[in-house]
Length: 117
Length: 252
Image 1 (cartoon, each protein chain N blue to C red):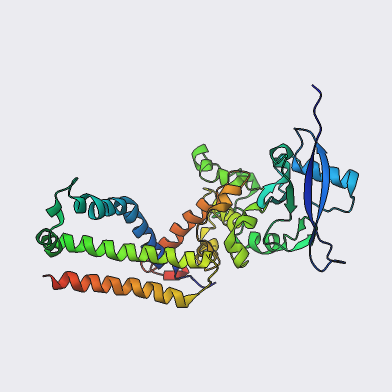
Image 2: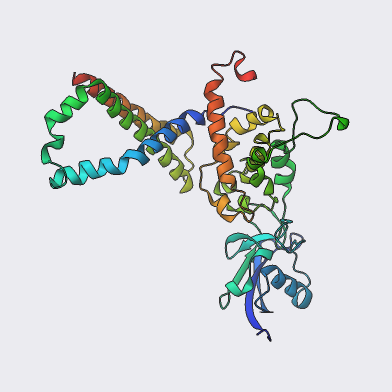
């Protein structure tokens, strides 16, 4: 019986799901509510200088890259399965498009993180 | 206390492959008491109204797994479901989803019995065979606890009727068979995991599941097949990557 390559995608999906469950709501809250309104956190908490410092730090780079990579692969598999649940049995075509986007987003994030020095 | 007799409308799917080209529905008015199950309603129809209605049943107490059917669209054991809970509404009874109809409410379980069940080798495969005189394989309560709830499966196939993946592609091994795979894999007396792994690792094994979870919701015995599938997804993922570290790779 042919071995499925699903474990590769499922492992990334699982890791992304775990990370999303732990930090995604708080990320949305901080970046979408707390900082922009300036009431709960100071408005300059995410200023350009501070974010640049984060993106120039080795651990900061790794954290940002992991968030992008794992969230993209998590969302990708969820969307792929959702298409199937909704009756679109797209097969490997949709898989290539969805995970292709995830790979491109990861490469873009990596390039940007390297470019900021 | 004198029981008040009420009447409920039961609509049954009828299909006779010898004379019908498509299924149709037939409605019966069934008098019932508070303690009557849906199965007893069907038995009333067969005994008093229409002897030609076909359905399977045996134990009447949710242990034989024969009387599963779609009751108002939900896969349930008809002996485990009560008419009073549907009154004054109507009741629609259909054969289990995703299986060919033999006649009326009786489905053809051949795919499960002949293909799915044997494929997971649902029996203990000991490391070394042991003569009867050497005594039994011992097990602690803690070891038994690891698989016990999976062993409660009664093969009623409600989970297959609930599983959208099985409905889309019946090559998928399916919830009950994977739960039984886990029942034996998790048994301390069993050493057959490697023999069951090829099936688990395939697209039609655990990877056919998208974790809808409805199988576990409809299971009348609390087996939780969705959890068994997920445990095997973890095992299959470890197996996928660890084979690169094993000296003999995929051969085990």
